[in-house]
Length: 174
Image (cartoon, rainbow, N blue to C red; front, side):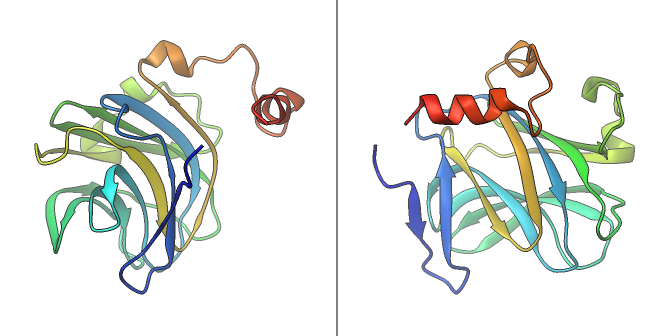
């Protein structure tokens, strides 16, 4: 397996990338505890200077989509009313040149497709990068990431958080 750490050209350290150029359209969900600083998730990662980013910066209640291509270009923003030291469940849908990010409080059973993006998320469009994996960047914490091609891929037979199936799946890959 190739080294999935990509050394950063700037002072942000290294990215740990999951997925590769075979990842085109996908849905990712994860638990996210933001921090007052910058914190984001890179996607359709090409290299350490070319990728998309969904993030929040500082203490403001805004989520933004950016394209990194030698410089930062913001192409969409929407509300993310987060609180320090609180976990959220988030979803990123990547399909063609369209991207949708939604958030909800951890433990909220509302299906993501019933969450109004105008109230709890952001939609964006950009056609620069057609494929690539994901990586975490910045301050804050992530946990329990699940990625699939369709919504059905995300439906697990058990709740894996902190359970033996999660650990066993990791051990089986070794």
